[in-house]
Image (cartoon, rainbow, N blue to C red):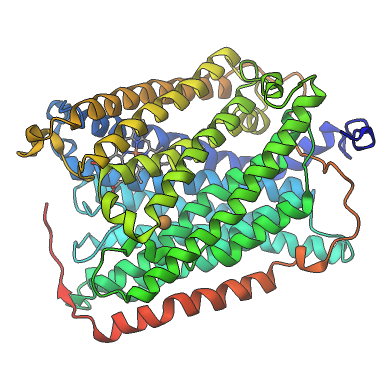
Length: 565
Ligand code: HEM
Ligand SMILES: [Cu+2]
């Protein structure tokens, strides 16, 4: 490598004490979001393990009291609590800190931040009450005509509203910063957070329409019938980009923080900007790939969304390249050599935050490949609604995203709480065990899915299950992986508790922030402005969705709701 590219590692512009002073103003509400997310992770994880054991025909539900015996109530809780609430609360907290650190200023409106927390908590409580009273056993996709209690839909509205409020606060903060720095470009960390919010705002419009125009009035009795195809399509308008709402905060960490954690620098800042901006454009016109087998959706649009899904793979491939190059740079500075052996110079066994993120990327790569299979129109027919899909989604959200959030927590919680990380060795064990747990569980699920085991099914009592001998070992792996994840998740929460109530930090912790490898010169303005990309995303999403949605709204028959549970 060119030695000129290796100047001394740059030091941060502000001393650590000044930075921790900066974080203090927003530390408390951010901490609330992060700690709430941990409680939700614990709650949702328990059901995951019960579900995983069911795949091996072990039924632990019968030992539970009351409603908790109900498989579908538990599965609804698992999906809603983990996929929507755990991720949502963690992301609000984490992105808030990224904006504060990135722009070196507190959030613009602290009152708004606390209101965001209040709205999110109210929504979460409404969801938990209706779910655990068995009034909303509609799974996290809440497909009509399954009909939940109005409190469930209202809870979803509030949680979505909280994300918009957090987005607004980020934007207000950026606007205030821009007024003072009209000629500077938005720092990458803040830009990444703002792109995530812009992408999510556009994506969540489908959910907002589904809930406010259709599902909530219908559950309140204002409308007798529901258009189930339309509301399902509106769900997926938001449902696929929801995946990028989970992933982009992980990308934010991989691009703007992880390189600094391994002593490297970001390979290319322009590429990183391009990736985040591309997600604003490409994330939303994709969701019909969840409806490949639905009648009533025009075939041409299925193909279009399939192609668009492949287009979003481009920024993910760029990410794989850029992030690995940045990490490699760090590894070489640490003395790493050779084409492959440099990998060994990374702190796989000594730094849980780094190891967790590297392992998350490995598992993410496998999920990317299975995702290609899901999104191709013909192969989707083989795996649709089988456990294969659940294997895929766990590599992405329970693997890449959750493991990254856990790894980030190993510096984030000390930063927010001012306490020393407890049990570093345990933390290393934790990230590795989560990695193996998810790998084993997903292997089992993929295997069962290819042998046509259905998802969302209480297999212990499925009368046909015993005829499928091929499911046996897949089920054993699913259950074993699920139990390993249960243990690992428990260790994670224990470490967090011991940290929060542990010894005070001797030295303040700051947000790791990667510097670019090459000092970027002037950059085109289009790499610093989100609004044109947002406009493009809006236009593309309208073109890709509106004709289908329009036809469904106009022509598709409606039906009354029902309760199967
Ligand atoms: C202890 C860790 C976990 C275990 C053992 C586990 C296990 C499972 C199993 C076995 C299923 C399939 C149930 C069925 O289709 O019958 C499932 C579904 C699901 N899991 Fe997990 N999971 C875990 C963690 C997570 C995490 C951390 C997330 C997200 C952040 C997550 C999100 C989901 C979602 C979205 C579904 C689909 C629910 C549905 O079909 O309605 N899981 N999980
Ligand atoms: Cu999708």
